[in-house]
Structure formats: structure tokens, C-alpha cells
Length: 248
Image (tube, rainbow, N blue to C red; front, top):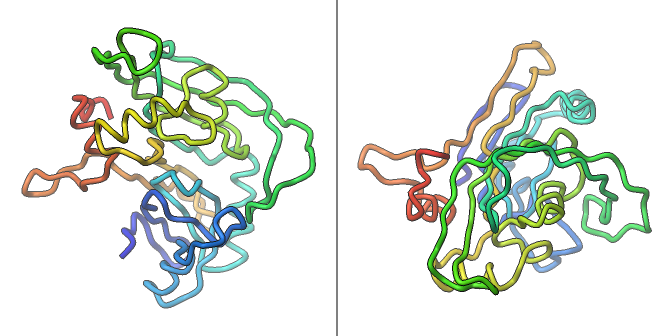
């Protein structure tokens, strides 16, 4: 069952698990489970995705119950008035804070079909380094290996923007099979049993399209239950192991 983070008569937000597609895609024709279908069956009514998260990305995913609300929310995403916050684990230690201003071209349509060569569009991401670790292991060509926890705030909504931007500044996200470094991905899989993309949308903030009231949908990382346990996700287990729970 999907975890609901917010719900009213017009909108519903879920905590999307990693590995779950939002809807059917030509990139994963063998998949039979989709967030749209699961949420529809869980709530017993039609739902429409307002935005997208990559299959490997977890966290806040927003749906509407009708096409008019989708249209109104889509306008907010297009205008850049929706504030999105992500957490990611990256290779190396990026500067404490910065802005990545690097145009990106769309490569695939919303169903995963490859598009003809498209013109690059403006793409901007703000980032902030939250925590670091240096492991006494030679994963790559250096005698030690450095990793960091970063907060990412995309100011635009280009395809795979965060993954491509972090690669652009030579700090790819761990677990990214397309834009990352395989030797580090394999190390995390082998050493920590962590094979997922270490990227999660932790918060969405927007104006409610019908009431104008500010809404914040949040997926708290490493939140403990009454028994002191976390949700058990590989991302959260890794943050605990690296001592990054407070930083997240």
C-alpha cells in the first residue's frame, strides 16, 4: 500500500518507493506495476499525475483527481513557482553551496520514446552540501573515497535535470546507472547492499490551485517510529550508517 502524505478533494501526494514507474514507459515494457494504477486501486477512483519522478527516485509525488486541477498545477510547475527539495548522495565533496546553470535538451518523451535532437533549454539547480564522509577504501584511483550528502533545489524542470547536473559538475549521484560511475555504484551495492539510486524528493511546496493556500508535502527522511526504527529503505539505512541522520 502506498503511503499518503497529503490528501484533499482535489489533490493527493504519495511517498513513491524507488523502482516504481509513474506510468507505463517504452523504456520498461516488462513492468506491470505503476504508481497511477496502484493509487487508483488503493483509493478507488481515477488519479492523474501532476509531475514525474524517475523510476529510481523516491519521495513526494503529486496527483490530481481531475483534469482541470492537473492543468492548473501544471501551470505552476511550468512557471517555476513550485518549490522542490531533494536529497542525494554524490561522489566526492562538492563546494558547500552553489548554482549549476547548464542548459539541457530533452531526450525522451513522457513514455520513454527517444526524441529527435532538440535544442537545449535553460536549466538551473541550487545545491547545498549537508554532510561528508571519507572512507579508507580505494574504490577508484585514489587511496581513499569521498562522498557527500547534498540538498538539491531545481529551479527548472528539465528531464533528468538533477542527475545530469550533478554529473556536469563531476559529482554524480550514487546509484545512477546512466550518468554515474559504475565502480562507485558497484561498491555501494557490494559493501552496503545499496543498489538503488540515492535520490529522493523530500518536499514540494505550492499554492493550492483552488484555494490559493500554501501547501507543503513532506517526506521526512530517517523518521523513527515509537520503537525507534526507521522505514528500512536502503537510502535511510545508508544515512544512518554514515552518521548523517541529523544532517538529513
